[in-house]
Amino acid sequence: MHIVFYLLVFLLASEGLSLSDQGGEGIITLNYPPDLTVMELGLLSVSLNVPKGSVDSIKVGVNLEEEILKIVPDSEFECFSVHLEVGINIVSITAIKNRKKIDNIVFRVFLRSDLVSKYRKPPPEFKKDYFHSKDRSQCIACHTLKLGKLDKRPVNIGAFERESIPGDMERIGATSTCFSCHKSVTSYKYVHGPVAVWSCLFCHDPETEPVYSVKKPDTEVCFSCHVEQKNEWVNSKYIHGPLTMGNCSICHNPHASDNLFNLIKPSWDLCINCHEGQATGRHIIVGLYNEGHPTHGVLDPLRKGKELTCASCHNPHASNYPKLWAMNVRSQFELCMKCHKY
Ligand code: HEC
Ligand code: HEC
Ligand code: HEC
Ligand code: HEC
Ligand code: HEC
Ligand code: HEC
Ligand code: HEC
Ligand code: HEC
Image 1 (cartoon, protein in one colour):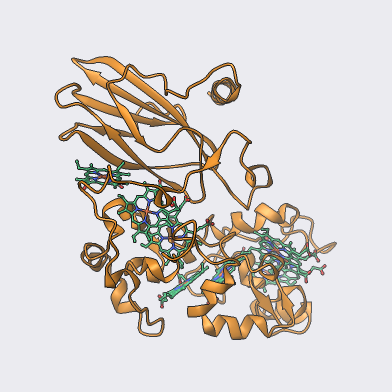
Image 2 (cartoon, rainbow, N blue to C red):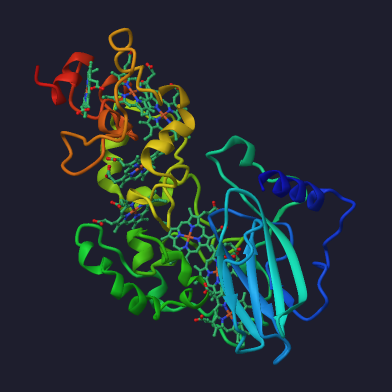
C-alpha cells in the first residue's frame, strides 16, 4: 500500500499530469484550498460548492484512505476540515448519486515540519496560500470576518485553570469571529490556554502583512505570557539547542495536540527524533550494563503516576547543570542517587 501511495505521489507530482482543473466532472467545485498549498500545522479547511440535489453523499479520503468523512449535503456550500500528515497529502473527494460515483476531485497539500529535515522545505511546485490576504466575499455570505472585541481577550496565566473547562470552550468560542471556520483547532485532547478561550489575536496580528502573521522567533510571543519560564531559562547556564534559536513550536503545537504539554509528538518520540543514538539508554550506564538504562515504559519514581522519559533526567529547555540535568545535581552519581537509594 505504501508503494502504491508513493507511486501516486510521484505521478501526481510529475509535470506530465496536470491536475490544475482538479480533473472533476464539474459537479463539485472546490472553493478552498487551491491545489498544491503549503500548510504549517496539521489541520486543513475545505470548502466545496455542490448544486442542490445533484449528489446523495460526498466521501472524503486522505492518502488513499477510502473514507474518513461522509457528508450528506444540505446546502450549496459544504465546509469541513481534515487532519493532515507531515509531507505530501492527497485529498480525494468523491460525489455519489444513486450509489454511483459521479464526480471525483483530487488535490494535494504539503504539511511542512521543522522537525523532519526532508519536510522542512516544500517541493518547488507547492506554495503558501494566504487565505486572509485575499478577497473572500464568497465566504462572508454565511461567515463573518469582521473582528470583535473578544478576539483578543486578556489571559491570566496564574488564574487560568477554571476557564479551561471543555464545556466552556464551545460557549466562549461562539463569541469569537474565528470560531465558525476554525472551530476544529480545539478538537484535540490538550488545548493551549489562550486557544481554549479563543484569544486568537493575542498571537495573530491583524495589522501585519500577510495578515494574522505571528511574530518570529516564537519566544517573542511565548515569553510575553510565560514570564516565569523566561526568567528561569534565559538565566540558566546551559540552554538546549532548539531554544537557543527561539524555536518553541518545533516541539510544542501553539494551539492544541493529543500529547501532554501540547507536544507535537509524545515526549520520548520527540527527543528520539533528534537524538536517535540515545534511544537504547546505553548512554546512561556506559560499560556498566549492556542492556542500557530504561528511558520509557516504566514509572518515574520521582513524578507520581508519570512515565519515566528522557525529560525525567534532562530538562528539555535549560538547566544550570551540565547535560541539562533536570534536577539540582552536580554530578552524574548524584543524579543516580535521586532515584536509586543504594
Ligand atoms: C451557504 C453558507 C456558507 C458559505 C457561503 C460558506 N460557508 Fe463555511 N460553513 C457554513 C456553515 C453552516 C458551517 C458550519 C457547519 C457545521 O457546523 O458543521 C461552516 C463551517 C465552515 C468551516 C468549519 C468546518 C469544520 O467543521 O471544521 C470552514 C473551515 C468553513 N466553513 C470555510 C468556509 C470558506 C473558506 C468559505 C468560502 C470559500 C465558506 N466557508 C463559505 C456555511 C457556509
Ligand atoms: C470564512 C472562514 C474563516 C474565518 C471566519 C476565519 N478564518 Fe482564518 N482561515 C480560513 C481558511 C479557509 C484558512 C486557510 C488555512 C486552513 O485551511 O485553515 C485560514 C487561514 C488562517 C491563518 C493562516 C494564514 C492565512 O491567511 O492563510 C490564520 C493565522 C488564520 N486563518 C487566523 C484566523 C483568525 C485569527 C480568525 C478570526 C479573527 C480567522 N482566521 C477567521 C478561514 C477563516
Ligand atoms: C500562542 C500563540 C497562538 C495563539 C493563541 C493562536 N495561534 Fe494560531 N498559530 C500560531 C503559530 C506560532 C502558528 C504558525 C505560524 C507560522 O509558522 O506561519 C499559527 C498558525 C495558525 C494557522 C495556520 C495553520 C497552518 O497550517 O498554516 C491558523 C489557521 C491559526 N493559527 C488559527 C488560530 C486560531 C483560530 C486561533 C484562536 C483559537 C489561534 N490560531 C491562536 C500561534 C498561535
Ligand atoms: C496569551 C498568553 C499565552 C501565550 C502568548 C502563550 N501561552 Fe502557553 N499557556 C498559557 C496559559 C494560560 C496556559 C495554561 C496554564 C495552566 O493551565 O495553568 C499555558 C500553558 C502552556 C503549556 C503547558 C501546557 C500543559 O499541558 O501544561 C505549554 C507547553 C505552553 N503554554 C507553551 C507555549 C508556547 C510554546 C507558546 C508560544 C508559541 C505559548 N505557550 C504562548 C498562556 C499563554
Ligand atoms: C526540545 C523540545 C522543546 C522545546 C524546543 C521547547 N519545549 Fe517546552 N516542553 C518540552 C517538553 C518535553 C516538556 C514536558 C516536560 C516534562 O515532561 O516535564 C515541555 C514543557 C513545557 C511547559 C510546561 C512545563 C514547564 O516547564 O513550565 C511550558 C510552559 C513550555 N514547555 C514552554 C516552552 C516554551 C515557551 C518554549 C520556547 C521558549 C519551549 N517550551 C520549547 C519540550 C520542548
Ligand atoms: C529539534 C531537534 C531536537 C529535539 C527535538 C531535541 N533535541 Fe536535544 N539537542 C538538540 C541540539 C541541536 C543540541 C545541541 C547540539 C548537541 O549537543 O548535539 C541538543 C543537545 C541536547 C543535550 C546535550 C546537552 C549537553 O550539554 O551536552 C541533551 C541532554 C538533550 N539535547 C536532551 C534532549 C531531550 C531530553 C529531548 C526531548 C525532550 C531533546 N533533547 C529533544 C536538538 C534537539
Ligand atoms: C536515568 C537518567 C537518564 C535518562 C532517562 C536519559 N538520560 Fe540522557 N544522559 C544521562 C546521563 C547520565 C548522561 C551523561 C552520559 C555521559 O556523560 O557519559 C546523559 C547524556 C545525554 C546526552 C548528551 C550526549 C552525551 O552522550 O554526552 C544526550 C543528548 C542525552 N542524554 C539524551 C537523552 C535522550 C534523548 C533520552 C531519552 C531517550 C535520555 N537522554 C534519557 C541520563 C539520562
Ligand atoms: C529519574 C529516576 C532515575 C534516575 C535519575 C536513574 N534511574 Fe536507574 N532506573 C530508574 C527506573 C525507573 C528503573 C527501572 C526499575 C524497574 O525496572 O523496576 C531504573 C533501572 C536501573 C538499573 C537496572 C536496569 C534494569 O533494567 O533493571 C540500573 C543498573 C540503573 N537504573 C542505574 C542507574 C544509574 C547508573 C543512574 C545514574 C546515571 C540511574 N540509574 C539514574 C530510574 C532512574
